[in-house]
Structure formats: C-alpha cells, structure tokens
Amino acid sequence: MKDRTSESMTLSRDAGQTESDERAIRAYRLARIRAQLAAADVAGILVSDPINLRYATGSRNMQVWTMHNVCRYAFVAAQGPVVLFELPSSMHLSRRLETIDEMRPSLAWDFMAVGGRGEEMAGRWAAEIADLVKTHGAGNRRLALDRGDVLPMAALAREGIAAVDGKGAMELARAIKSPLEIESFVASLRQTEAAVADMRAAIEPGMSEQEAMSIFLAGSVRRGGEYQETRVFVSGPRTNPWFQEASDRRMQAGELLSFDTDMIGPNGWYTDISRSFLIGDRRPTDSQRRLHDLARRQLDHNIALLRPGMSFVELSEKSFRLPESCLANRYADIAHGCGLGVEYPLVWYAEDAQWGAYDGLLAAGMIVCVESYIGEVGGTEGVKLEEPVLIGDAGPHILSSYPLEDRFA
Image 1 (cartoon, rainbow, N blue to C red):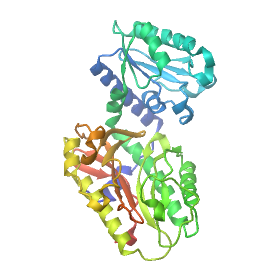
Image 2: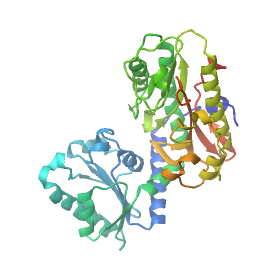
Image 3: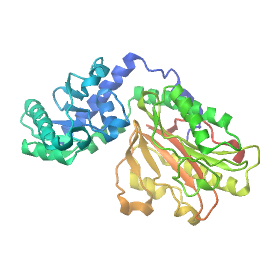
Image 4: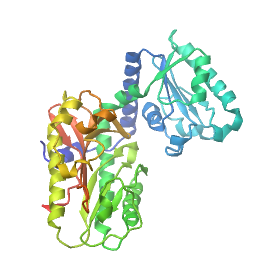
C-alpha cells in the first residue's frame, strides 16, 4: 500500500479549479450520463435530486431545501438538449452554464406548494415532460427518473410515457471520476482537513461536543464548504455505540472525541474523513490504545485489498475480521463510494448480506471511503477512523493528508 501522505501530496499539487477545468468536468459528466442512458435504452432522464441535478448540469440552488421540496428538475435527452426547469425567481443562477440548452419555469405539485391542485399541476407537469420525450426520443417513450412521487408518476402514465428507474444510471455515471475531478476532490478535501486542524487546535476539556463541531463547521464554511450531512461529533461514553449526534455534553480530560466530517466541501464534493482525538494532556489508557490499534489495523488491511477488478463480495469476504466483542457494534458498511455524496458502490459486511448486499467490480477512477468503527458491546468508548481512497490502475492511493492521532502509538 502507498504511503499515507506522499501520494496524497502529489495528487493535490496544482489542484486549483479554473473555469476551463469546470467546463471540462461538466462535459465529462454529461457524457457519462448519456452513455448510461444509451445502455438503458431510454429517451432521456428526468433528474430532480439536487445532487444529480448538480452532476448533470453544474447548477445548484438551495441544495438542502430542495432535497425535501421538489421544485426544480432537468430533462437530459439521450440524444438532444438539456432542459433545466428552475424556480421562476432563480432563473438567473444558471444562465452562464453551457451544459443547459434551455431553461423553463418549473411546476410544483407538492401539497405544501399547491394544496388541493396537486393532481392538476402534476398533469400539466407530465404533459410538458411527455412533449420533450416525444420530440427528442425518436419514438422511444421510455423515460428514466431518479425519483418519483405518486401524482406525477400517474400523470406520466396517462401521457403514454413509461417511467423507469434512473437511479442506477446516475450512480454508475457518477462512480468513475476523471483526472480533473480527482484533482478538484483533493483540493476540496484539503479545505475540510484544514477545518479539522482548526478544531484539533482548539478543543479542550470542558468544551461541549457542539462547540467542537461548530469550530470545524465554521472553518469549513469559511474556506468554501457548503453543509454537513450529519452531526456525528461525540465524546467519552457517547462514542459507543456509534451514530449518536453532537450534544451539549462537556468533554472531559482523557476522553475520546470521535467524529465523522460528512462535509459537502468546496465544489460540492463529499469530503469524508473520520478521526478519534484524545482530549487534554493525559496519556491514553490501555483500552484506548487497543481500540485505536484495532481500528487502524482494520483500515490498513481493507485499504490494501483495493484494486481494479476486485468484486464487492470478494472484498467483503477478505476484509478485516472484527473481534467477536466488537462485531455487533460494527459500522454500517466496509466501504462506500464517494463523490458529490455517498455513492455507489456500498460494500456490506458479510454478516449483513440479508439487508441488500450486492456484487459488482471495483474500477480505476472510483473514490471509495474505507470505514472503521471499533467499539466493544458494553464498552465505554469507541474509535472511528475513515479514509477516502482513489482506486488507481495499480492499486489504492489514500487521498487524505490529515494524520491519525499519534498519541495512541
């Protein structure tokens, strides 16, 4: 496996993103989508998930709010135009984007927005989308969608349009990053790591978990970061079991602060690392050393396995074997894709196959986050570590440069 820092530093050199870079990234992404649409034999795709909208067009508008209020969407023809449907008050936001051939006012059908007129508005929406499919689909009436509500789906069917699941097409398109995307990702990650460094320098006994998280968040936003997807910054006994959220609990000297950044950083990249810090000046306990050593061993073992052509099932089978005392508290996955969010693939633990584990192949150009959580059942603390890793032609390259806590060595 490559050194933790030297490869990362090489990949991050001259990673500033110019307008030319942005245009090249947008062109690459649109070509990736259209290749998937051709493979799926559809006339086009209608994307309304704001992350997919951003990937397809480069446009963004109220990313978090629009995740639960469907009010903007885009039609991407397999062979034809990209039409962005935007809030009438926000049309100016995307005029400069060369990926967008046409902009139209969006229509809402959600009850909050239109009350009892939902069926009527969904019908108007479906008629406009159906016209695009019929105009640009060359007779193909199959339309992929990345999400769908009941009213518009029924309205599309009345228009004679066959709606098919488009989530797979978007996930597969997003899975392979171009060299320029990788440079942009690393540049974004460096800003998140700088915010982690701000927090590490400031945390002290008596500070609350929320105060620690706020230092990180402020540092990230100041450097161009956008928003956190989770709030998992926890200390002491709240580190076990995992997936508790930051609270007003005051951290004590000698305790662990374990966290997961889960930060949408500059340029929309999901900059995702985890570390466990020791609070104050005390020496770690034997138990803390053992937990951190196990977590690091799990991380290093699983990263070393990564290579193009390895199947997800094979990775699961060959992954680090957790001690029985930690198995029930295992993390949700061994590794997951990383891009504009948590992406395909997701590699399950073998013990969790019944919940939806699937197979596939790792490929060069994927960025995957390798996860480790070590916390014994009934234990007092837990250690969380995570590294984003580029799968290169010859194997894994760790993209983060922020070191693991050295006091556990």
